[in-house]
Image (cartoon, rainbow, N blue to C red; front, side, top):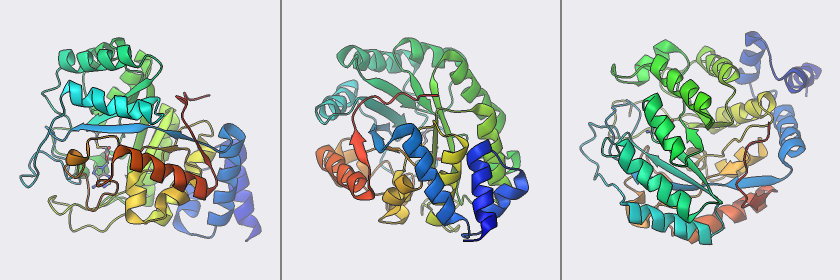
Length: 347
Ligand code: SAH
């Protein structure tokens, strides 16, 4: 390893920041990886020990009003059987998850207009009543500030909304004209002001994405200072207009996980399903690069393959208990330990 590699990583570790040119250097070669991953692991252990938090993921609807060019559940995909879980089905997922030790439930879905505030609040407050010791996380896209407030008042405390791309041009290339980066950002700041623990993030290797775009993502995250940051490789889906683009790489995703750990030592960083999908060892390597969260699937098995954001998504065939055990074994094999507490972020 060159001395300069050590210096650059040390600077990032000490100042939690670099100038653009230095970020570019880190992102564009593998020369710094060894030092970067070593330091990222050191920092995660300083802040979180060997703990890895479990979040039970419930994909409760694949209806979506949006038409994002990369996403398999986009509105105009006619090749997809749509589903929507009832409140009782969602509660049953939570019951199963609770038995398996989960204390965080993540309700994720497309932007399904069926779930008006009243319906979603009713679901949230029933989960909250039955599992008062659990954290409820939502990931249901862009809504009004009033709506976010109502969902918060019903008991939701965390919200995952990836900003997707902090560069306006890239954002517009990936999304329909009905969506805007401006509104995406507004949603994130609204959520924060209301008092949610907020998660942002982006895809790595998205179509047209450049190193400059990734640096813009890092700068936006500095501005937002989120509690959670979810990143994963872009993976193509055959029923989207972006099916011609190649998948993002595991190497670059891991490098970014490590950089994020050094920039945001306190953050909750998931080792994502997309990372596990592009490489069988992806999630383990993600943990070793600084990630400290895994999100096993808690959705009913018969709907899992319908929540097809991208091709060959893993964990669609297993029961929730199998999924949990499989992930626990993987976490252990990577050298860490699964914990079942709520794992609120510690700044
Ligand atoms: N409707 C919600 C949830 C979106 S799905 C919302 O708008 O936030 C969750 C995440 O999956 C998205 O934020 C996106 O970053 C990711 N995703 C979608 N399509 C993908 C693809 N083809 N490859 C990799 N990740 C994808």
